[in-house]
Length: 29
Image 1 (cartoon, rainbow, N blue to C red):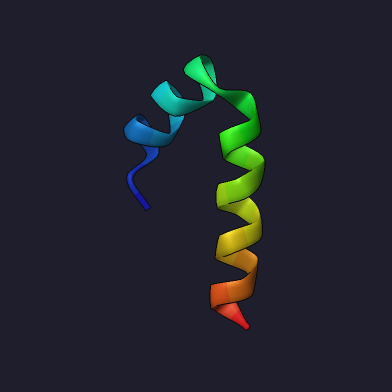
Image 2 (cartoon, rainbow, N blue to C red):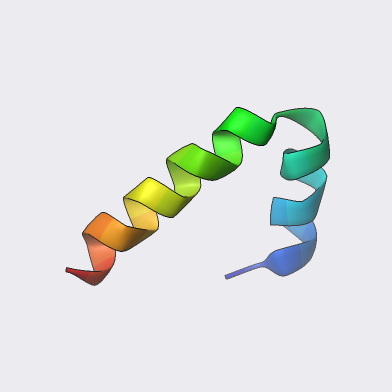
């Protein structure tokens, strides 16, 4: 994943990170 982009999003919208993590876990399965 693109870490710098996620870091910027985390600063702007922390809830978005939780959404991304959930989507990632679903995609992995």
